[in-house]
Amino acid sequence: MVLLWPCGDKADAAVLQYQNKKLAQQLDAQQHKLHDLKAKMKELLGRKASYEDFSVTLNRIFGSGIR
Image (tube, rainbow, N blue to C red; front, side):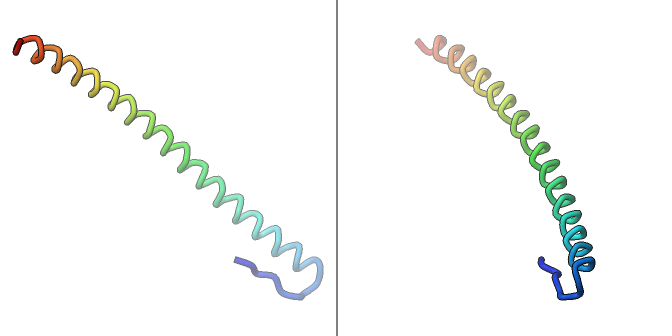
């Protein structure tokens, strides 16, 4: 969102500082969300590996019992 209007250099600088502050806040929020999503993904991948190990174990048990 651009809020520039011709009111002099000081006003333009103030608007740019405000926009910069807002963009920095947005970036910070996005970085926190990204960090949280990466942590959740790591957790889910760990759970997936655990389920895969369990599945392999079950296949070994039932596979050896059928033969």
